[in-house]
Image (tube, rainbow over all chains, first blue to last red; front, side, top):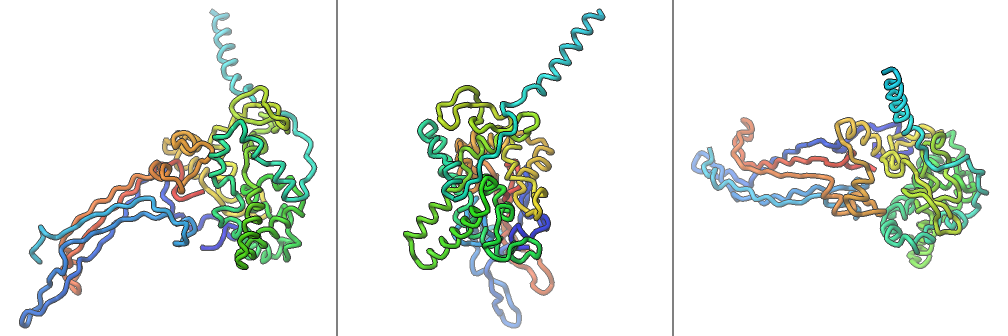
Length: 88
Length: 319
């Protein structure tokens, strides 16, 4: 329910992180690739074997990016497929 | 031997009674003060500027806090009060409010119980004056009349959770045991004389340093004592039932005032120190070829695993 507290009969959905609790989130990001025709077959080729991923944890006090948003955490992660060069 | 046992039992009995005898320095229920009839009168009654001379640091910290602008907010609180009136009070069939002129102190208490608890010391005219002032402030913004908007914003901000809201009006929770806050006394951690004409006495408020004190507003959810309970802050409920119940033992004040060194600012998400104190976040990443399914085949994917640990004493986010 997105309405104000004056209409609510209680918490209908709790999405906060409980105290002393650990929560996990997993994100899967597909590397850019294309299927290249080789004769009557096709072969997948990586367009880029590196990903720069920025993980940002935002707090949106009013549920939207309205100028009140706060960054709780930010970290950049470099991923690559250089050691996984063979497309199996 | 029998005498020895008697003395031992007597000592234990005295020790057990002692905590229950350590009542606070409240007193009999004082006579109600005459109702404030204007915003200015109510603001003056709870004006914090008289404290600044001796308590400059605490006053400066407080002036940075949201307590100092408790009905203005960031400033999103004041418009939300109007929304509560338009989308709530005026649409509810039994609220008795169809027009702004129907608004009373009681009808605003859904918000003001916490945002301005001293409103119960004012007449219904003050409740209507607050609403009219917020509306005029919004209109001044729409008209780009910055000077008027600023002046009205100052009026709205003159009503707040100032020094004497916490250190007098709300200072004592268990009034049957500890007494009622006295009109000449400022409550804190010391007792004795206080160099002030209005509040010449100091006394100890037993729960002022305990989480329950903050729980009066940063509470347990619906305010069931109201005719129309609103679902509001749950921080103290979360603290009791999910933090203390799982072994947590720090108080609100320990983190928000002392460890953070924020003192009377006691900020939360707006402060870098509090953010660092609140969460541990770790990020791991790897890449692999993933055989997804027959249709899409083998895909090259990066996997990011994020772990967030809430180190605080309440759910995040909460209020």
